[in-house]
Image 1 (cartoon, rainbow, N blue to C red):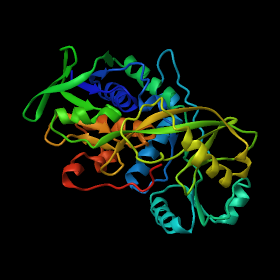
Image 2: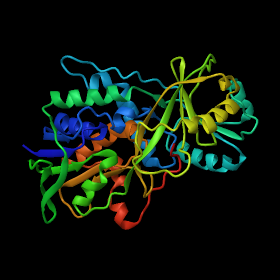
Image 3: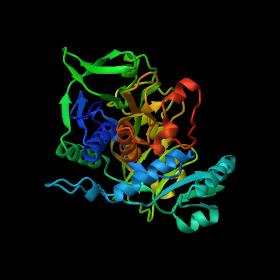
Image 4: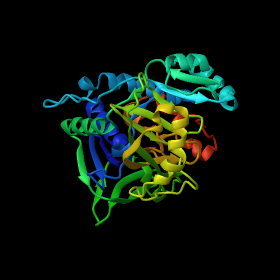
Amino acid sequence: MFKVTIIGGGIMGAATACFLARDHGAAVTVIERDPSYARASSSLSLSSIRQQFSQPVNMALSRWSLGFLRRVEDELATPDDRPAIGLVEPGYLYLATEAGAATLREVHAVQRAHGVDVALLGPAELAARFPWLAVGDLALGSLGLSGEGWFDGPALHRAFRRKAKACGVRFVEADAVGFEASGEQVIAVRCAGGSRVDGDAFVIAAGAWSAPLGAALGVTLPIHAKKRDVFVLETPASLPGCPLVIDPSGFWFRTEGSLILAGGPPRGEDRDEEPLHDIDHGLFDELLWPTLAARVPALEALRVRSAWAGYYEMNAFDHNGLAGRLPGYANAFTACGFSGHGMQQAPAVGHSMARLIAGLEAPLITALTPQRLLDGRPLLEANVI
């Protein structure tokens, strides 16, 4: 039986393992150093899904994943579980002042050409649809009319792991530290403590911590752990029909039941692997709250209920995922560096990675090949939140 060893049991590793075992009959071992997933991006993601990207590959990946999420109860059912992930589709709303209007129009044209259900709205149309929104400084808004929203990401991650285990995938707690290789063939993963796991194919899917594993094979993966804070807000205000709103400032917010979730780019230098427990409350007090109150006057009366932080596995090369065969190796692959949109694209990427490893065509991820790093061909994504 074809044996595959995957390093990383987060959403990318779990999805790839599940599809390999379920659809291709592979014998899969997943190596995960922290089975609690306490610091994993999969556990701390905002878990939203959109098609409003600037690159067609991202539109296609999220569209495939959306179809999967809509039928996830059947796709990931096990004899004792039918997963529920609470998918809702209120849309995304990108707002632009006159300075950003031309870019929004350009991206809109690309999105429409690739079948994204999106509409450009002027200030009057925005005010009519969202009367709680202040539009005085806005020139345009781009609203996803269908196929965008959010879901329970940790529940999806658990469902992939349960289905994978039901299909025979073995999850092993260990810390992968290196490889054994002969020429273009990787032979085994070496783990701390001296253990090793062999296989016929190997996948690096360690999220924000993928770079050292790539380096162990002589491959530079420009992946960095970038902390992002999320604030959970209580407010008496009601925002009917609220999508996920991206303000021209870069800050964003959306509803979660009676609560508001909000966040945005960090203050100052965007440093690597800042401690997750170190929430920057000054970001909220000095920047986020004034921005929210200006954009939605009803949100002037709110308070912070709680906050959390997670890591973006940021690909410094072009802010897009790396998915495919590692340069210089016949049987080593990676799926990492999705820069904030990994949770939403994991079903499509995992399915495609499984096909690629099984020797089949995987056109959905062709553009994400790691070879583009060596070729100096960045696939730049303009719509990174």
